[in-house]
Length: 213
Image (cartoon, rainbow, N blue to C red):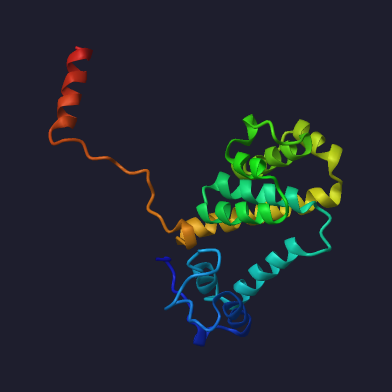
């Protein structure tokens, strides 16, 4: 379950009610969850807890899908999908694998995103976009000049700014989904201590002590 309260249909503000209706029909998504893509849908019900935050996020979706965007949708989806994978959000990665196919990205390229650096299916432009996305997500925005110059060979200032904003936006969404345990990111952290058999720890340390002696 999400870590924050979900807003039921009868308490939702007007924009959320409209989106609820589009995604869930007449169901209350809190008591009867589930979207057409198989997600629980709790991103929407949790974000609705702060109406202007909900509206701002929805406007962000409209921004990247706007016909005013100059950035190629396939490059955009490569960046969004890689951002989800690199930040470890199963939800963002899974949803944008589907969105990548919707904009015509070849299946080989969708499947190659986790190990893009060793894949041979990407063009030089696509590889530059993926490398830039990794710098944004994994390096906190540290982008080598050499990489940026490669990016500039194929993308102009407008396209690079759109790419930077959208990839960074989806790193934020990936991070928030993990922190709040939304959608497919409602999972326990796999990095935990694995209990050893009773007495094993002291036996191991005793053996180490003997070796050091």
